[in-house]
Length: 134
Image 1 (cartoon, one colour):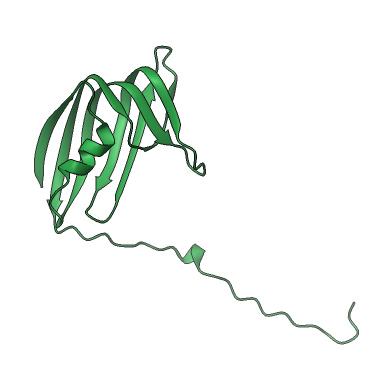
Image 2 (image 1 turned 135 degrees about the horizontal axis):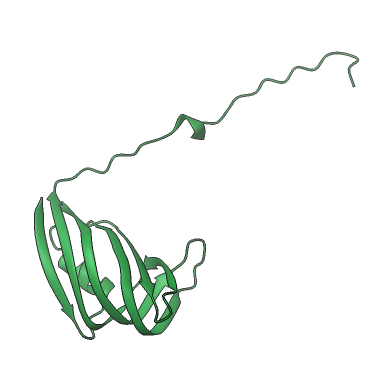
């Protein structure tokens, strides 16, 4: 795995920049660490199509996920001045306030494998009806 260390400066769109950094179509990039602040955050909560947008000074608590040529899955959590933490799926429009340091690991030719559970398999039930039974 190769590692890359980036500093995003004031005004940089975090989501768009991460997508742009992932140029190698035969690799998967993972966010290993992120430390910085934001002037605006845009994210989507689970089961909600409408984005949540906050425009104020925010500290990044976590920024995690992966980037591939066919897909990305990135999550962010941020804290405001009262230490209230919120987050979800990272969206375009998340802007760096002063600085953001990100460590990214890149793994070439990584195959994503599906793990299934026997719990998810449909159950078969046979129903028998006895004559003259209500």
